[in-house]
Amino acid sequence: MMPILLIEQYALEQRVVLGVCFSFLGLLIIYYGLKTLEMAYVLKNKKPYFVHFYLRLKTLSHKEKSILSQNFSFYNTLSKKHKKYFEHRVALFIKDKDFVGAKNYMVTDKMRVLISATAVMLTFGFRDFYISLLSKIVIYPKAFYSKMNKAYHKGEFNPKLKALVLSWEDFEEGFKIENDNLNLGIHELTHAIHLNSIKERDISSTIFKDSFSELTSLLSSKKELREKLILSQYFRGYAYTNKFEFLAVIIENFIETPDEFKSEFPRIYNKVKQMLNFNMNGY
Image (tube, rainbow, N blue to C red):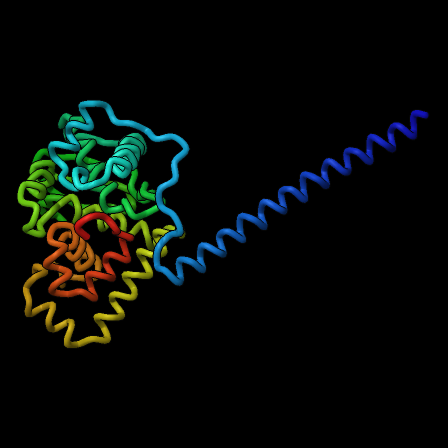
């Protein structure tokens, strides 16, 4: 009797193991099938199948929400639903990053909220908005001496140290005039997003990187468009330093003067809009 029970128990265990293996295999097939379908959707539509999906939304404190509503006009243009998504992402970004005051400079809630809000604004069309190449944000009161190139800077991004360094005075200055196409936070965070897109393989990074490649190819093949860009002086001269500065400058313009950008250079505007998956009011 005992051998029969042992055989039956062994057979049951085999069936359980096989069942687990087949279930796992089935889940893998479903997962990669969905990934394949989404990739086909992305290739056709140049955007993710979905961006916002949250089981539970994080909230900001009353003080943090007041900082947003009083100092960040982009937030105020959003619908009630998207404001909640925006707050959720700002709360998670603050929690994910290490904010450090240089030389014992005190980091305030306003600094954390507004720097995080700038990052969230730029990645609001992304599914993955964390910018994993960025882990530390160092804040100076004013322009600081950079050991990278032995000069004073208002901001810089160091991918090796995964650190964004900002002058708070100049960060705030960037938001005082919202249509001068000069915004330190947007500029430096664009560098972080750009380099992160080269490193990462998620859907949004891939769209960002591929769209920028399409833009550079467009400009390379259209001499008259390149000449129009330079002659128009719509983008400041610093844009033509290299491809990284070009991207940072055109995204400053995209965020601050979208109507003028669209009117002057619609093909470039549409590539930037595709890059950021930006489908908000005013864009």
